[in-house]
Length: 122
Image (cartoon, rainbow, N blue to C red; front, side, top):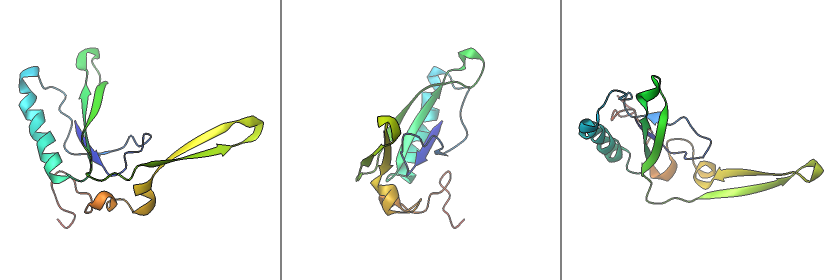
């Protein structure tokens, strides 16, 4: 499966799907998956794009691994906020500078996010 987002926060597990997942690909059909990866990277060159690989050996949808294949040219980074609470407990919050500065769809110089190559006007 190929997914993309403009919010790469570690707790953001809901990225936009580029196309439906391809569960039944064999090893010799890697070119089919790579076509989706290339198309998504071309359409969303200024966003984060990742590939999620599934393990079908257990008979159900199980994520085996995922990795980022595209990142924006400019990444402003994250800030770490430290909060001290009762009983000397320290909590940390991670916030992206891009999320603080821009609304969804306008981070990293992006246009409004589209699905599978379709523009927002379509």
